[in-house]
Image 1 (cartoon, helix red, strand yellow):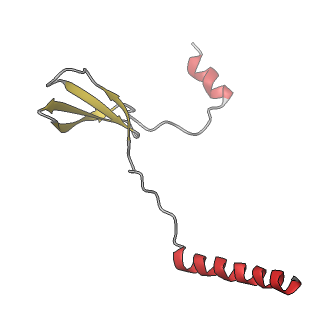
Image 2 (cartoon, helix red, strand yellow; image 1 turned 135 degrees about the horizontal axis):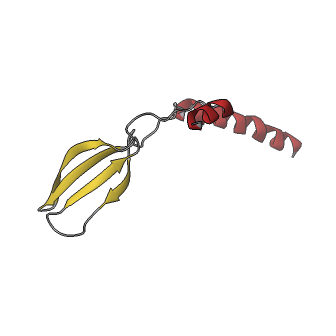
Length: 97
């Protein structure tokens, strides 16, 4: 009985290594790089609707006959957001009269 249990451990490790060898590959994202995060729709036929992507790009499209023609409108964010913290002295200097 002890020999049988001892055989299961190496067999399990061998099968684990074999499945890793046969099926392992690096993980990669499957989502689009710039997905749509918000939409504004009028709900009527032949209306102008808008889609906003994750980086702030706005696309306008005219719904016509079940299809649409996207048109780039602009970017809502305008400029990159500063990531460095502001010092208290800079804040006071900016608002000092």
